[in-house]
Length: 420
Image 1: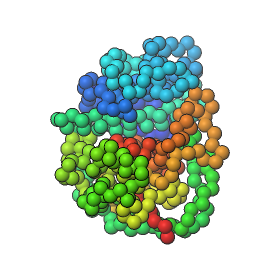
Image 2: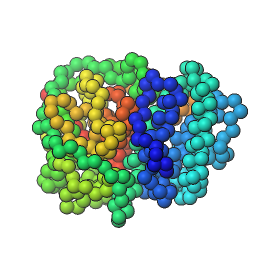
Image 3: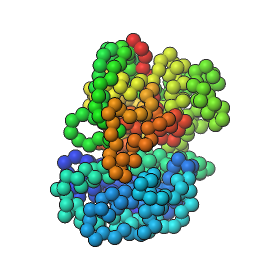
Image 4: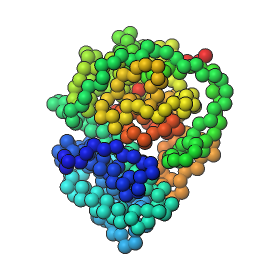
C-alpha cells in the first residue's frame, strides 16, 4: 500500500461531497498501508472477512447503489464482482458464501485496488455532475457511513487474524495509553419517568435509529465509566467462570463448550493481552474489552448490578458531549478515563440489556437498501457508544450497534447499572 497516504479524519459534515468521499476512501486505504498482500487475503473465522474483501465490498456498494443506477453509460469494472463482493443483499442477486471469502486468491490485492480506483474516478465524475441532487447526497452519506463501519470491521478482523499467528505480529506500532488511573466507580442517579430515544433533529442516522419515540424507565443509577480490566480480573480470580449461578443458561453452555476462562486476547497468566500493536501488558485501569454479552451479563450479576437498558443508556448519553477515544485518537486501544466527566463514548462498545428489535413505527428503507438493518432484528443485543476503532463523527447517542450474545471479537465492554 502507499505509505504516503496520511492517517486523516473522515469528516461527514458540510464539506463538499467530493472531499467527503475522498477522505473516507483514503482512510480505508491508510488502515492497510502496513499490510502485505498475504495479510489481506486471509480469513480467520466465518464471522470475519479478509481485508481485501472489505476493500472490494465497499467499492461494490458505491458501484451497485450509486454508479450503476445514476451515472449514464457507466459500465461495471468486472461482471463477476457483483457476485463475489455482495454481502447479504438477496434482492441484488447471489453471493459468494461468507465463510469461504478467504479462499478467493483472485482477484489479487492489486486488482482490488484497481477496482477501487475505477470506482473512485467514476464517483468523482458523478459527484461533480450531480452533487447537488438531494437523493444522491443521501445515498452518498449512507455509503460513506457504510464504509466507516467497514473500517472498524477491517481492524476487528485483522486483530483476530493476527492473534492466531504464533509470531503475534503487530498491525502497526501503537502508543501506550497515558499513565492514568480510572476514576473511582460511582453511579449517576436517574429518575423514573418517560424519556425520548431514537434519532432526533437533522443529520444522518441509520433507519434502525428511527422513529424517535417515548420509553418509560424506572428510577435507576448508571456507572459513570465502563468496567475496567482490573475490576474484571477480580471476577476471574473469584471463580466467575466456574460459577454457573451468575450465568444465563445459554451463556453457561457457551462457556463450557468454548472453554472460556478470560476475555478474548488475554494471556493465560492474566498479565498481557494481544492488541493491534502486538502483545502488551494489560492496562488495568482501561476498560475491559472483547467480552461477549454473556460475559458482560454474568459480570454484572456477580457485581450485584445489571446491564443498563438501551433507553437508560441513551437518555444519559444524550446529555453528554460526543467526545472520546475514537479511531482518530490513534491509540486503537481502550484507555483509562479520569476526572468527573462521564466516559460515555469511545473506548469500547457497551453491551446493553436490550434486544435488537424494531422501534414502534419502524420502516426500513425502500428497495434493496431496506436489507441493511431491519432483517437482522432477531436474536441479537444492542451495543452503544462506539469504540477506539470507530471513526470519530460516526456515532451518536441514538446509534444502535448489534451483535449476537456469544460474539466477542468486536471491541465490546460493559457499564453497570442498578435499580434505585
